Length: 172
Image (cartoon, rainbow, N blue to C red):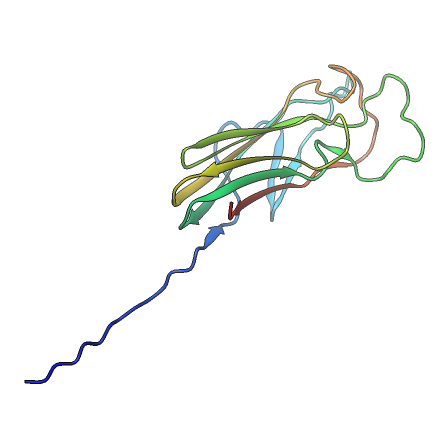
């Protein structure tokens, strides 16, 4: 009798994937909703005081990573800043940026990023995950009532304010 051995092999490359964002029901305060990948605050200021109104929203992403990895959350502006750069100093006593807090859960990580709006810069937090993980990344964004970059309850200058928040699931 003759026999031949035929090894069968394969390889699974290290891969991480993150799905599209979707709003979670409940606990949504003062957000219009999700348009594509954009979250829109419904009413940015209190009409009487012109101080920032509270806003919060929960967003979920399906995600999977088949190897130990890092979760990174990044704020492009370190808070909500005007879309147009001002050429002169802001009026005394008026806020010109809005801080917020982003908290997230992924696998065994519970972390947060405080975008304090003290300086316009990239701000990020990184969390190492020691095992492959599959499930959901839960993100909560919260703007406190009266939050500002100069003092609590300061009136805020008129304009469009923006930040880009990025979530990375990446190699360590």
